[in-house]
Image (cartoon, rainbow, N blue to C red):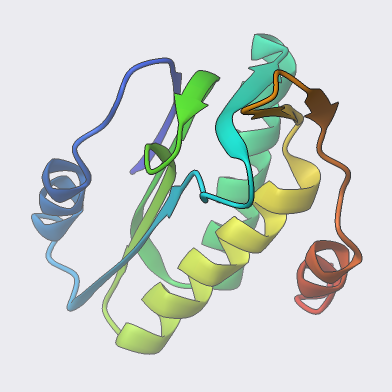
Length: 147
């Protein structure tokens, strides 16, 4: 089971974890990313091209399914204007074993940071807006998983 959603509203991480828990795996791993309160940041605005984004997220999930024995994957990513502390992304994986679930969840997040076509703009308290550049550390983390 693979669930992929790109949404503007919030999500219920607990409900999503519960949805994977019924798949009879021995482990469910999850990660929730939030908007950080860095400096004078007041909001983060995420844009995307729907057809391209959903295809990229599906590709990431399919690759994770090939690398680890998973019962299910959930990827939910928000777009639009998000305030400090709001949820941006949820990744959940379900497997028979803890290590596979945790590694697959980490892999998906590392790939989302570099391979998913989201454009992020930071909005500061003084009204300044700036596009977020890809970080070298994110590129290296994604590359460490290999092809």
